[in-house]
Amino acid sequence: MDAPIDEWISTHHVCWEIVPTRARNEGGHPGFELTLLALCGGGRIIDPGRSECHVAHERLAEIVSRVVPPGQPSHVEAFDAAVHLRPESAFAPEVELVAELFPEPTAAARVRSEIETALGRLGVRAKVWWGAAAAR
Image (cartoon, rainbow, N blue to C red; front, side, top):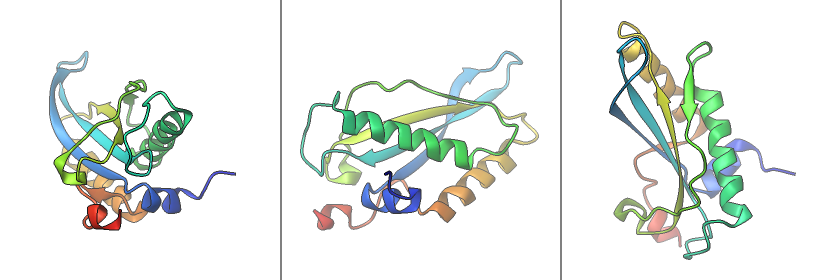
């Protein structure tokens, strides 16, 4: 049985970033990318094709579905079978999920704010899980 999402978020030190994207939707509106990162492999470099990494990507996609406002289309990029190493996480291997969103320009700030608030309620941290390196 899967762990409850809030427990999984804490165990895997899930972090988020939101950045503008150069891409535009069919209507010509710019959007933004929501990136979620989760520890994979318990801090050890592992084969990124392991089922553990696939499961992490699936759980991150579940988080996206929980935080994107209803009716707001989003596109989640496919699992890329790679671990990502960032100085913010002491170069521990992380699975990355990127979701593209293209809200109407008049709603972009509201959509971003709603996503950030929902991520906070779930316990997802902005950019870095402070103390993550010390926890290993």
